[in-house]
Image 1: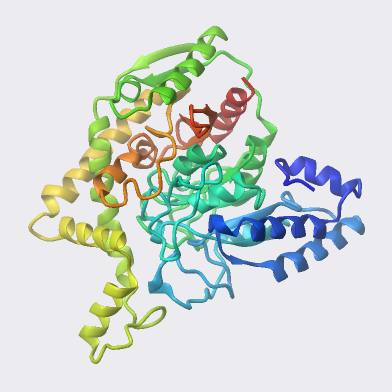
Image 2: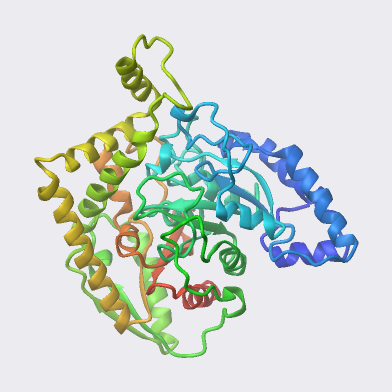
Length: 474
């Protein structure tokens, strides 16, 4: 048996009794075991997944109605909680913590007959662009084990890339789904902010965080978003906007207006092969009769500073709850309350998380609040308005997902500023709150995957999926 690249094909094979659902799950468990060196899964739910497979097989055999995601073998990033299961955010600070409830997105997967096979490694508290910041070691890129898979949802991307499961849920705060998707040659979406409930997602930066989806194809990705999106009484920030049947509308029936950002293609850091692949796709669109125009986005240079000022501020606030008092890691040598706080947080958090907490605390301090945080909020509004104005004139904005293909392990570990630049093309969607998707766009000379990113206006995921499908078939 080979790993499935399509839920539709799996369901067809199950109905024709080519395989049992249990044998499918056993195949994925075997793949996970054989590729343990990739360091993808922190926990594998083997017993539970096999039991779920038996339960769903009985449902199929007895002719009962099947859920939208029946049989989908899916993994979840280690920032999404499920009742009775350990969740760590790939951090020592949450050592031994067992969730007391199940997050909305995860519960909706279960309710629609998906099979959750395990929890996947990530950068600690979703802070990173390489999956090297995990307390449990880095995840390796399946295309080249000497390369990073991207971050922070790197392991979730690799699990799909390496055939360890059919799809994964990750989180995207500044590109943490799209960048790994590009590095690993899979599909990865960040929906509109508020499209998916964040209830049960351990927060990094609450006004940026989005639950995203990795898959091998557009249709599966769309089906999953149909299930997890929508209003939720447990999250006051989630939208009441109706959730369409995205997967039923994957056709393009008109000529489109498409913009590409001059500053991205002229960026000095852009790898030549990514530039060529992006231009080739734009040229193909022109030849197909679509209107493709160059536009300028003069505030591109302010995206990263704005993003890092605001996200570190929110991280400083959100991560204050991890203190060693109520749950998780507590420094054993602490002899009073003050020392316990200091030692537990010093020993429990990794270097990158501590760096961002300190940066965030600094920009929120009384002396610097207006100079940094308030100004960054104003710039964020300008960037959002300019992005939305551009998307009022054009159907889509097309740009590279990343400035380079997957870089070697350790290459940027000692240079945080260089690592932060990896997000230069992805943070615009998070700062603006618009949806964006990364799709495969060929490989470079070293056979490393290249990603193409597409952005559109808020709540236009239907059109985004259709356009992505169109481009992937080109």
